[in-house]
Image (cartoon, rainbow, N blue to C red; front, side):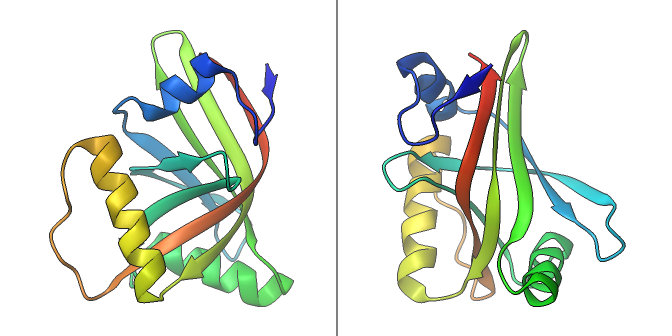
Length: 137
């Protein structure tokens, strides 16, 4: 079932506000998918999803490599599921390193997951500009 990224149904948005482990799928340089568990926050007002990560992680390197090769963002997807409920968000990802973006993403993570991550000077944000939302919530 398709959803409006900027105007999701209340049920779909509520599902994205619950505490769930998600997955992030990024393209490896050879085109194969790299799928890892992550925490994701969804901001429909801005049309963004955010994942905090270490700048040395494979997912960040994959996004940067695709960004450089394509001259834009890397095509990625985030997904979560629980029983018969599931939700996927897709879009173009870029890496944000500025202090304001990282602090905002950490605050959003803390709100959704109920804990503030330990300080990490190597933290960055995988920021996904969304263009597709699917699911059954």
